[in-house]
Amino acid sequence: MSDLPARRLLLVHAHPDDESINNGATMAKYTAEGAQVTLVTCTRGEEGEVIPPHLAHLAPDRDNALGPYREGELAEAMKQLGVIDHRFLGGPGRFHDSGMMGVEQNDRESAFWAADVDEAAALLVEVIREVRPQVLVTYDPNGGYGHPDHIQTHRVAMRAADLAAGPGFRTDLGEPWEIAKVYWNRVPRSVAVEGFARLRDALAEPGRLPFTKAAAVIDVPGVVDDWIVTTEIDGAAFAAAKAAAMRAHATQITVAEPFFELSNELAQPLFSTEYYELVRGGHEGGGRETDLFEGVEGVEGNVSAPEQNGAAL
Ligand SMILES: [Zn+2]
Image (cartoon, rainbow, N blue to C red; front, side):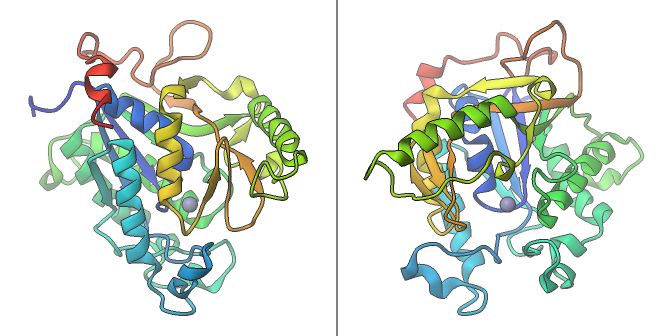
């Protein structure tokens, strides 16, 4: 295990595109700095609505080919971020997109929402014990906005973090590993409010944006009062990489920097600074952290300069 990079970050997401929207700048930054970034995506997003008319045939009620297509979009997005290690929980197609809360797809046998949390968590334990991350990023208990797959992702990720550390749990899945710090994705309310003010100004300029209507602050996953946010990662240097990664998810996202739109045709701000709530692990001193690895033992002095690896992006 001594050949692992010193800093190791694991992100667990529900569908392809969630990683780029929530953490694209963070992933690009840590990859550029030489950290190991591992993405685990729990479903292929088969139930997503398709934006471009020429790809509408992929939809579940037509060719039902969105899963494999979105695998390709995710691979391209990871190329844009420089992330090499991306996997699907249990392999591609093991768990299916459950659709929005309340639809009949929630109850399908293969739906991620219907999966046994411990069984799904054991699949993630194997990854955790292999890549030994000091930092885990996932969603809050409501999955940011209540989507069943996002809620389930939270449950599975938190459960796996516990199980992976247990010396008695499934020794066949590797040596126990305790994750030092766990974060949930957040957006400070003041940042969202300010972003929507900029968006409304831009929408008021005729012809400036390919969008017509703005979403509302309440539509942004993970929005909380500012004081709840413990950590902010300045990804300004990686804003272009993040936008390119989002653009790679063309079935789901239309990008016009620094804004974007989902299939609901409501525009939102695209944030290059990304925010987190530390829910496990220490945070010393006042003020927000500016590094997910702050205070993690044994990682100081192992950071390669961004300019050395940045070219690889
Ligand atoms: Zn999602």
